[in-house]
Length: 223
Image 1 (cartoon, rainbow, N blue to C red):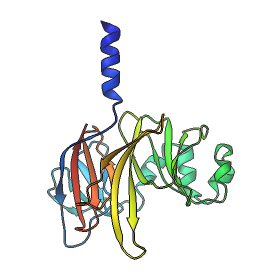
Image 2 (cartoon, one colour):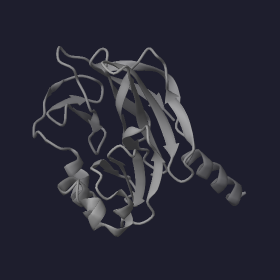
Image 3 (cartoon, one colour):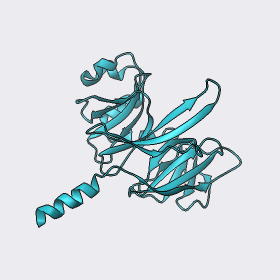
Image 4 (cartoon, rainbow, N blue to C red):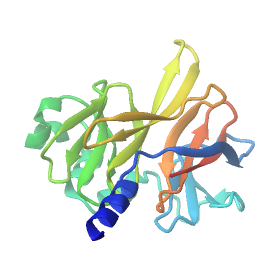
């Protein structure tokens, strides 16, 4: 019985994220709102590269009390590899043995997993990769993905896929990827939204994203 319960709860914990209901507007302004990032306690969303903030219920949109020009710095301070990716994005691949296959590529958008054991990042035009926090075990997740956000269990990332016609952005879809198996599952692929910059709340129940057409920040329940 105990083993059955463990298997049951283990499966629930690591199930591929899926949408529950339709996205809804959280906050909108005269100026476009972009790049949502949750605060550690889930009470606030930072926007526009950390210069704006809004309460999790969409109220009190305001200038950030302590603007952060690069929110990646918050995680960089806790891991040497992420810090090196932020501080030396063109050099880090040649300096870290496990990243040598990406030497010469610009490393950007590094995000450490909530469990602290892996980092997901993008490398030039080669796409998205995941690597252990010590720089070993580099794996490609695909060439078309961007701007990853982790689920709290550190087993999945949600990513965006952009489409354009050479002049305008025409598509923005969200997918989840199992970082252990590489399995991909659609999360939001409706042409009603051009969804960019996904951000999962610390409790794993809410996904925020920027909607390019309207300039609004949307949220969507997930499980």
